[in-house]
Length: 107
Image (cartoon, rainbow, N blue to C red):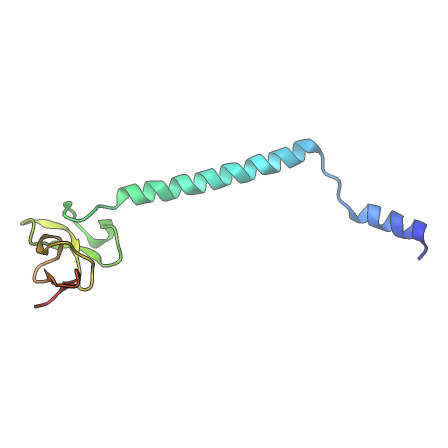
Protein backbone atom coordinates (compact mmCIF):
# COMPACT_ATOMS: atom_id res chain seq x y z
CA UNK A 1 0.00 0.00 0.00
CA UNK A 2 1.52 3.30 -1.02
CA UNK A 3 1.06 6.64 0.73
CA UNK A 4 -1.82 7.74 -1.48
CA UNK A 5 -3.81 4.52 -0.91
CA UNK A 6 -3.21 4.79 2.84
CA UNK A 7 -4.53 8.35 2.90
CA UNK A 8 -7.69 7.31 1.04
CA UNK A 9 -8.18 4.36 3.40
CA UNK A 10 -7.88 6.49 6.54
CA UNK A 11 -10.25 9.12 5.14
CA UNK A 12 -12.87 6.42 4.57
CA UNK A 13 -12.44 5.13 8.15
CA UNK A 14 -13.02 8.54 9.74
CA UNK A 15 -16.69 9.28 10.30
CA UNK A 16 -17.43 12.91 9.73
CA UNK A 17 -20.03 14.45 11.97
CA UNK A 18 -21.83 17.71 11.50
CA UNK A 19 -21.83 20.36 14.18
CA UNK A 20 -25.57 19.90 14.55
CA UNK A 21 -25.14 16.19 15.36
CA UNK A 22 -22.33 16.90 17.81
CA UNK A 23 -24.37 19.54 19.64
CA UNK A 24 -27.43 17.26 19.72
CA UNK A 25 -25.34 14.43 21.20
CA UNK A 26 -23.88 16.71 23.88
CA UNK A 27 -27.30 18.14 24.73
CA UNK A 28 -28.81 14.67 24.94
CA UNK A 29 -26.06 13.48 27.24
CA UNK A 30 -26.43 16.53 29.47
CA UNK A 31 -30.20 16.10 29.64
CA UNK A 32 -29.82 12.43 30.52
CA UNK A 33 -27.37 13.25 33.33
CA UNK A 34 -29.66 15.97 34.70
CA UNK A 35 -32.66 13.65 34.75
CA UNK A 36 -30.64 10.94 36.49
CA UNK A 37 -29.56 13.33 39.25
CA UNK A 38 -33.10 14.68 39.64
CA UNK A 39 -34.45 11.15 40.07
CA UNK A 40 -31.90 10.42 42.77
CA UNK A 41 -32.81 13.63 44.65
CA UNK A 42 -36.51 12.72 44.58
CA UNK A 43 -35.77 9.28 46.06
CA UNK A 44 -33.61 10.84 48.79
CA UNK A 45 -36.42 13.24 49.76
CA UNK A 46 -38.90 10.40 50.11
CA UNK A 47 -37.06 8.63 52.92
CA UNK A 48 -37.82 9.66 56.48
CA UNK A 49 -35.26 10.71 59.06
CA UNK A 50 -35.05 9.34 62.57
CA UNK A 51 -37.95 9.93 64.94
CA UNK A 52 -40.31 10.62 62.02
CA UNK A 53 -43.50 8.52 61.88
CA UNK A 54 -43.39 5.54 59.52
CA UNK A 55 -45.38 2.45 58.55
CA UNK A 56 -42.63 0.25 57.06
CA UNK A 57 -38.84 0.00 57.24
CA UNK A 58 -38.21 0.93 53.63
CA UNK A 59 -39.44 4.46 54.37
CA UNK A 60 -36.51 5.16 56.70
CA UNK A 61 -33.18 6.66 55.61
CA UNK A 62 -30.04 4.66 56.36
CA UNK A 63 -28.81 1.08 56.40
CA UNK A 64 -29.23 0.49 60.13
CA UNK A 65 -32.44 2.46 60.54
CA UNK A 66 -35.79 0.70 60.68
CA UNK A 67 -39.44 1.38 61.36
CA UNK A 68 -40.18 0.33 64.96
CA UNK A 69 -41.09 1.75 68.34
CA UNK A 70 -38.39 4.06 69.67
CA UNK A 71 -37.82 5.50 73.13
CA UNK A 72 -38.79 8.91 71.77
CA UNK A 73 -42.32 8.06 70.61
CA UNK A 74 -45.15 5.67 71.34
CA UNK A 75 -45.96 4.88 67.70
CA UNK A 76 -43.71 3.42 65.02
CA UNK A 77 -40.95 5.80 64.03
CA UNK A 78 -37.69 5.54 62.15
CA UNK A 79 -35.14 4.54 64.77
CA UNK A 80 -31.67 3.06 65.04
CA UNK A 81 -31.29 -0.72 64.84
CA UNK A 82 -28.43 -2.60 66.49
CA UNK A 83 -25.10 -0.98 65.54
CA UNK A 84 -26.62 2.27 64.25
CA UNK A 85 -24.97 5.53 65.27
CA UNK A 86 -26.89 7.43 67.95
CA UNK A 87 -26.76 10.57 70.04
CA UNK A 88 -29.15 9.47 72.79
CA UNK A 89 -31.43 6.61 73.79
CA UNK A 90 -34.30 8.42 72.05
CA UNK A 91 -32.89 7.67 68.60
CA UNK A 92 -32.57 3.89 69.20
CA UNK A 93 -35.35 1.33 68.74
CA UNK A 94 -36.71 -0.35 71.88
CA UNK A 95 -35.10 -2.34 73.63
CA UNK A 96 -31.75 -0.91 72.43
CA UNK A 97 -29.98 1.95 74.16
CA UNK A 98 -27.22 4.34 73.03
CA UNK A 99 -23.91 3.09 74.50
CA UNK A 100 -20.65 4.93 75.26
CA UNK A 101 -19.47 4.32 71.68
CA UNK A 102 -22.55 6.13 70.34
CA UNK A 103 -24.01 2.92 68.87
CA UNK A 104 -27.45 1.45 69.49
CA UNK A 105 -26.85 -1.74 71.48
CA UNK A 106 -28.35 -4.06 74.09
CA UNK A 107 -27.35 -3.41 77.68
